[in-house]
Length: 253
Ligand code: ZN
Ligand code: FE
Image (cartoon, rainbow, N blue to C red):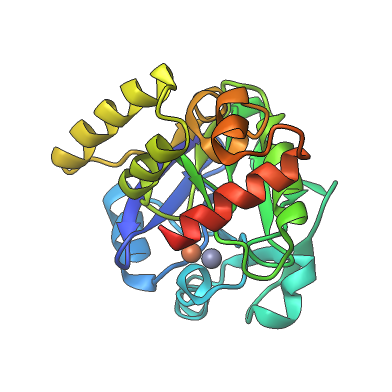
């Protein structure tokens, strides 16, 4: 399977996945139609599917036009079916389906929105996490509770360490600056901050990321860190409470 990532809107990413054997091509979300069309043309691929992670407009507003011109099959979260126009098939936790020769597993990852899902392809060691997990960050908790969002992040944290994670937005530079205020003594984070600054200065994408890199550097995945707990004065709190405090500080930053 080939994966192609490209910028959309102000700071979104579009992603195309392509199954070489069958010629199937899926867009992960549809932030806007034109960049998806351009990416398809550049790769010489024909759109057959759209896999939607959640209902927000910056992930769905291209669906209608792309579906009208390609007659593609649109798959999206069962729990948000009423909020997404053009869905042909809905999926949720535990569902699996085939994309060409690749098994796709669906994980419920609510919190950013109430029905947000993640598409995980274990044989390709890749996951498409929408606005749940970002590089050195996570999505805002808009429709769910902090506890629910922590549960979703903890689920992603348990994927194999080598899993490549594609995310909805390029927020990494702001995330890494914030992360350094939460865990300034984290050596892996300091090294990563330098790498990210270089990538951004060169106009390059900082995504996809990888689960093991996030486990080492992302403060939202590190509520068990004694240094973070000490800094926040939450030595005996539950993991989700530490996560919630980090998220609230990011909201205010
Ligand atoms: Zn969103
Ligand atoms: Fe978004």
